[in-house]
Every structure is written in C-alpha cells, then in structure tokens.
Amino acid sequence: MQSLRDLWRRHRRNVLVTAGILGSGYFLYKLYDAHKRRLTDLERQLAIERENDEFIKAQMQVHFENIQRIADTTTLPHAMHYLSCRIAEDLDLSHLTERLMKGKGQPNSLSSAEKLELWDMLKILSFTRIVVSIWAVTMLSLYIRVQVNILGRHLYIDTAHGLGSPHLLEDADLIHRDDQQNFLASADFLANYGLPKLISNMQTAATEVLKAMQLRDFFNTTVLHQTIMQILDVFLSTQSPHLWVESLMPEDPKLYKLATMSSSDKTNRPEVTQFDQLMVETREVLSSAEFGSVVEISLNAVVNALVEEKGFQSGGGSLTLGMPLARLLPRIAQICPSLVEEPSKNKFIQIIQSVPEVGLFFTLLYANLSTS
Image 1 (cartoon, rainbow, N blue to C red):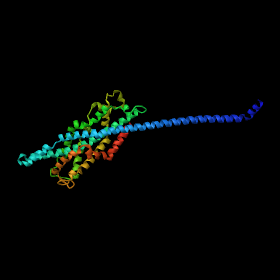
Image 2: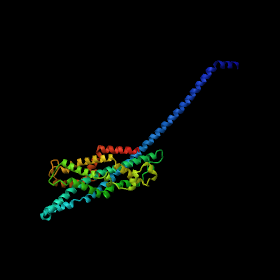
Image 3: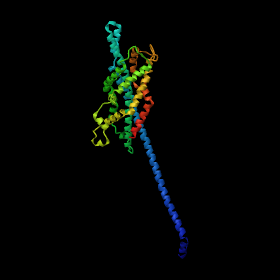
Image 4: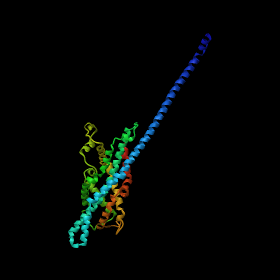
C-alpha cells in the first residue's frame, strides 16, 4: 500500500493531467459527434425541403401551364370568335356598299348629295371598324394575359399555404374552380356589353380626324398609319382616365370600394367572393401607368404590321406608291376580318405577344405579384 501511495504521489500530476486530457478529448468528441449528427440531420432536412420545393415548383408549373393552355386554346379563341361576330354585325358596311353599287348601276336612283352622304358614312364607318378591330384585338389579348398572371399569383400563394402539407397542391387551392372559370369567362364582357359604347366613342374620334379628308385625297402607308394613330390618340385622349377599362370589364361599386380601401378599413371590408378579388386585382393592373404604356406600344406594333399587310400592297395599285382614299376603303373592309380571326391564324396577336416590352411587362407583373 505504501508503495502505491508513493507511486500516486510521484505520478499524481501526470495522472490528473492525462485524465483531464482524456476527459476533455472525450467531451470534445461527444460535442463533435453531436454537431456532426446535427449537421447530418440538417442536411437531410434541407435535402427533403429541396425535394419538396422542386415538387411544388413542378406542380406550380403544371398548374400554370394548364391555365395558360386554357387561355390560349379556349378562352382567347372563344372570345375572339364571339368578338369577330359582334364587330361584323354592329359595323356591317354591306348596306352602304349595296346602295352605292345600286346607284352606280342606276344613275338616277341617287342624287349627288345622297351619294356624297353615303360615301362619307362609308369613310367614317370603314375607319371606325378597322380601328375598333385594332383596339379590340390588342386589348383582349393583353387582358387575357393579365388574367393568366393573376391566377398564377394566386397559385403561388396557394402553394405557400400548402408548404409542409402532405396533401397535393390541388388540396391547398384557395381559388375555387368555378371562380377561375367565371374569371376567365369575363373576357366576353367586351363583346357582350362593352362594344356598343366602344364603337360610339371610336366613331366620334374617327369623325373628328376624317372630317377634312376627301375621297380623292392621296393615301400611302405613312398617311394611313398617321390617320389610324390619330383616331386612336383622339379616342384615348378624350376619355377620362382609364374610362376605356369599362369597355373590358364591368364597373361594380362594391369592387371599386374594395380596390380603394385603405388597410385601416379592413374591419369594415365588404363581403367579396374570390371572383370579386380577382376582378379587383385585374382592374388595378389595367388602370396602371405601366399597362397603359404597354397598350400604346402594342397598338403601334399592330398598326405598323397592318399598313404593311399584303392586301394593301397588291391588286390594282400599291399603298406604298399611294392611292385615292376612295380606292382604299374597299381594301380596309377586306382586311378588317383578318384582325379578329382565330388566334392560331392571327398574326397580329402573335406580333403583340412577341413585342419585347410586352413580354417584360408580364414577366415583371408575375414576379411582383408573386412576392406580394
């Protein structure tokens, strides 16, 4: 025993130091092992989250593409066909041309004053029809793309609500399918209700621009472009701010109150449906200065393409070289239907969609809405 005590006294310091080192090493090892396990668990959790995120993004893309497909293959074609029929009915020029042809075949059937009056009406209505068609095809195609982006925004929100849920994205969908369908169906408002007022206002603008123009006046591509743009400018400038939006969607006092309500008024918020909320957001986009700029750029692109239309450049004279207004009017009547033909054949819709500023606007629109 004495030898053991002597041995302990002699080596106690070394033993304690060694024990301390071993104990510290074991403690550090346990800390490292626990940290490593935490890192492994964190990496596994991050991998699961990344996998879930990729799955959600894929679901979002599929859902958004389905909405886009509905817009491109159903909503826009249906709306364009219906709009084309309504424009053809409401701006039918056949009664004027028939009376003029009859007067040509029977010289005594119309007086000079009656002929001039018919030609003046044909002049005004021909330009009214082509400008209404230009405006309608531009606004309708842009309007439906706004709808798609707003639905995409709600898809993003719905997905965020569904994070961590074992259910599929459809189970987290906050926008009822009926509200989506009703929202997309609102694209028919222009043809159903907005067209008569649009035609009346556009005819007033056309009358003002064309009142000093005679049938013998010389028209070329530059003059035609300037005349159409002048009518559009007069139409837009004589309207109160964003009044033309009323041609695209209904004016609902309840929705207007909701759109202008401050955050402090939310306790008195009127009861609205999901469809109402979608329409409010649409009106806000259509009333924005950025959308107004996109409209102007798109209208100009369509008019540029129109004046180069082959129908103006062939058959009894080229518009590039110029022709009297009287010879131009029949060509305007012939080209008008091509402006509102079905989207798959409508090069003017394709031109609108290919304008860089239009693509950028909708890219930013979707991105901004997605972060709101």
